[in-house]
Structure formats: C-alpha cells, structure tokens
Amino acid sequence: MNKIVRYLLGFVLLGLLVFYAIPVKKRSFDDWYGDGDPAVARSLEAFREHPLKILEHEGLDWTYMVWGHGTETLLFLHGMGGAYDIWWQQIEALQADFRIISLTLPPVHSLQEATAGINAILEAESVDSLNILGTSMGGFIAQYYTSQYPKRVEKVVFGNTFPPNEIYARENGGLRKLVPWLPEWLVMSQFRSNISKTVSPASNYSPLVEAFLLEQYSGLMSKKQFIGRFDIVLDSFAIGRGPEHQRIPKLIIESDNDPLVPPELRTRLKEAYPEAQVQTFSGTGHFTYLNEPEAYTEVLRRFLNR
Image (cartoon, rainbow, N blue to C red; front, side):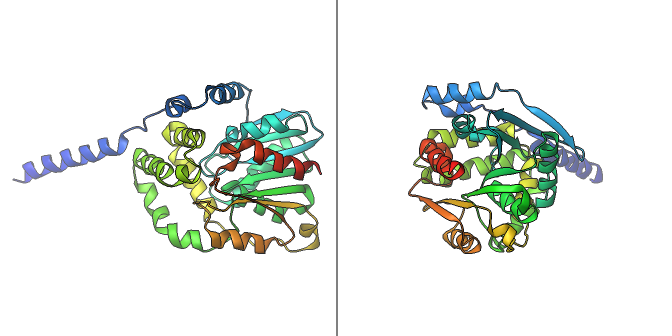
C-alpha cells in the first residue's frame, strides 16, 4: 500500500511540475493586431529595426535606444506593461527636437534600483540634465527621480499615473505575495484577460492598445520583470517640496475614464503638484499615447517646446 501511495504521489508531483513548467505561448504584435491598420504595423516594425544599446549595471542588462537630433535630452519611461518601443509614435514625432532615450525596465524591485539604473544610462550617454516623460509606473518613477535629483530635471510629464499611496498596496498586497508561486503562463494569461476586459473597453477597443499589450504578456515580458514592476508600483517615497522642486515645470496628463488609476488617486496627484499644468483627455483610457497619438504628442510638444 505504501508503495502505491508513493507512486501516486510521484505522479501527482510530476503532473504539478509539468503544469508549472508549461511555457508562455509566444504571439507577436502582428498575431494580435489582426485587421488593424497595416500602416501602423509597418511603422512599428520599422521602428523596431532601430539599433538598441545594452548597459550592464548591478548584474542586470539595461536595454535602451538613443535617437534624435536635439540639444536637450528627453527620457521616456514606460508603464508596467510596456517597453521602450511603446512610445514609438511620440519618439518619431519628437526626434527632430530632442535627443531621446527610451528604455525597457529590467527586473529591478524598487524605485531606488530603477533610478540607479537610469543614472547609469545617463552617465554612459553623458547626460547632465534632462526632460522626463513617464506614464503609469513610469510616471511614478519620474516623480521619484524628480524628488531625488531636482537639479537635473528641466521639465517633467506625469502621464496617467498616481502619487505615493496606500491604496494599491491594500488592494494588491495579497496578489503580490501569491504571484511568485504561480506558473508564468498563468500569470500572463490572467493579465491578458484583464486587458481584454478592462483596458481595451476604456480605450474604445483600440486594436493597437490591445495588440501591443497582449504581445508583452505573450512572451516579451518575463515573470521576473512583472514582479519587479509590481514591487515598484507598491513602493513609496516623500514628494519633494522645496523651491528646487517647485521651479520645475510639470505637466499632468490624465484621462477621465482611466480604469487603472482611480479618481481618488488622480485627485491626489493634482493635489501633490498644485503647480502643475493639467491636461485631461475624455474617454481615451489609460493608453492615450497609443490610441490618440497625434493629440497626445501635440500636448507634449506645446509643453516641452514652450
């Protein structure tokens, strides 16, 4: 009897290992984009041919691109489900005016680690001062960077983001503890489902928003990166209040139907930076720079070039 039980337990454990080890099924942007505008797909494909740089810092590879011809530097910081190329439409539009750096965040686990890697890139590229555009998690990093290095920041844009808060930790702390124990394919599957059910409807079912994000959760972003970004969103810091912080021109970009940043946090963000300009888009969701790129870019251009 004991021998049979051992065999059964062995089969169960083997089954669990197989279940856990199922790889994430990789699907490309084109696979998800379907009947979307072929000109947009060709534009993204051409952009991805631009050469990338890799910088090793603290044992991690930081992948980034440098493009543009301006004398001022503009740093792009993506959100939790993004990468360096999620900004391609804005980068192409602004590359004549700025020297642009756009990166893909590796699996770092704190705002301090993220900032240290960013500074390593800036040092490698001989950047002393910069403008920053961050959205969602990237906007959170931009706030932290500005609080720590106000003398380096010329202008900053906080897009569809949130201030330090207890809400995300309260609502997602349990999930954060669970995620490391879940198989990667299951984690990515659940977040693909969330995109289709929550993010896409708020973006007016934009095929571009859906395809780009679904590609990220279909083999481009690892579970390690996802967990690190989760930790950054749950991190906290003290917002800088001194005159050196106040003198920095700031722009808050928000959407009135953002499904990922609740109204309370949008209000808190504006209260945290009362000196900031505010641009509110109506009915464009969390990824306005993707589904309304021309309008979004024009807002950026007016602010950055004024």
